[in-house]
Image 1 (tube, rainbow, N blue to C red):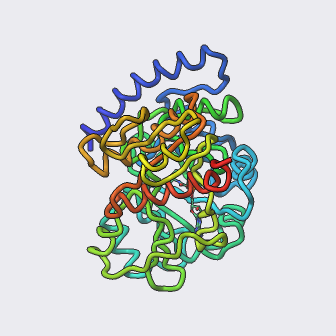
Image 2: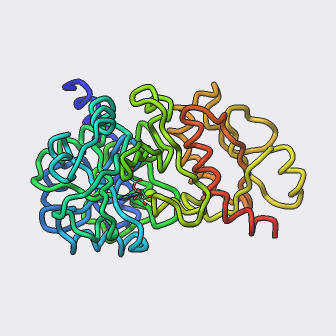
Image 3: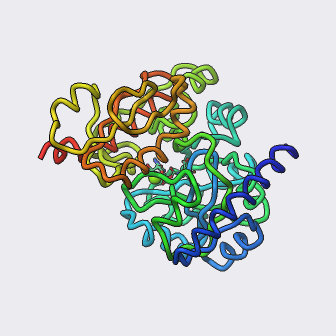
Amino acid sequence: MELRSKAAYEMTCQNATFAAEFIMYGDKTQSGGDINRAAEALRSGGLVALPTETVYGLAANALNPEAVLKIFELKKRPAFDPLIVHVPSLDAARSFVKAFPEGAERLAERFWPGPLTLVLPKRQLIPDLVTSGLDTLAIRIPNHPLSLSLLRELDFPLAAPSANPFGYLSPTEAAHVASRFPEGIDYILDGGPCEVGLESTIVSFATGEACILRPGGLEAEAIRDCVGEVKIAEQSSSKPDAPGMLSSHYAPRTPMLLGDLDELIKEHPHRKVAALHFCRKGEIPGEVLSARGDLREAAKNLFAALRRLDESDAELIIAEYAPNEGLGLAINDRLKRAAYRGESEAGK
Ligand code: TXA
Ligand code: MG
């Protein structure tokens, strides 16, 4: 643990230089590796963007409704979409929920800190704004040395959704946060690029039985190995079990189509097209998620690659599915949501 912290701190220093250059281009949001400064801002009811192993979060004191309201306002997030609460330890997690069923306990022991969120019956002391009035709470321990140190410094938990405008691609680097929010955030804690690159897997115990509400950075196979057969909730409905799992989400501004790249390019001969290749770069220019076809590497690169394509001069992004196993399940889930709006508009 000691060694990991040191490596992360060095990484932070490098990125702080990069972030400082960023500020010179006119952005007002300050960033760096200063945990005390982040803690101070949070104690005074401010907003701090912080690194986790999954994606960057936009954090506020979860016990202060006024601070939490700022998250919804800045992200333009609808009030029906509840937030995940972040804590430094299993004991802290226990203090905010009414029950910790045996399966949840086993998952927490095995995978926390890590890319797993548990949905459990909530205690009153968590404000209704955080959970959008639900009687359950989504909670996790993130696995990033800077954010773990920050959480240990504080005497309150942090509510933190991904630090992107509602509906847009999630940020996996501090610069992604600064570019979308030039103001409104008191401090960006820069912990380098996120290791996992996909949001946490959400497992609900709301009905007693474990059910995966959102595929994410922890593979369904690993969850099943730990607690046996687990249901995966229907993902495509417009009224999903996890209120934020809308059909269109994690989406670039540029229209996007999903399928066989060679077919798609033939169907759009007159448009400037860029491709998101899973592992093989063909004729079509664009990004490759993992030349060796490694799902972890692909997951880590996904949002940054999509962001670069979105910021290029391409009129249309085309993307192919990853193999539907392991992290491929979550990668394909994000690709489908990113392309959803595109399917109705991209052909025009
Ligand atoms: O990896 C992650 O989970 C990141 C990092 C920052 O921790 N956070 C994240 O938060 O992805 P957000 O707000 O972008 O996604 C949270 C999801 C939403 O789809 C929301 O509807 C669902 O969690 N959620 C929150 N509370 C819930 C609850 N009580 N029951 C069911 N779903 C819930
Ligand atoms: Mg999000």
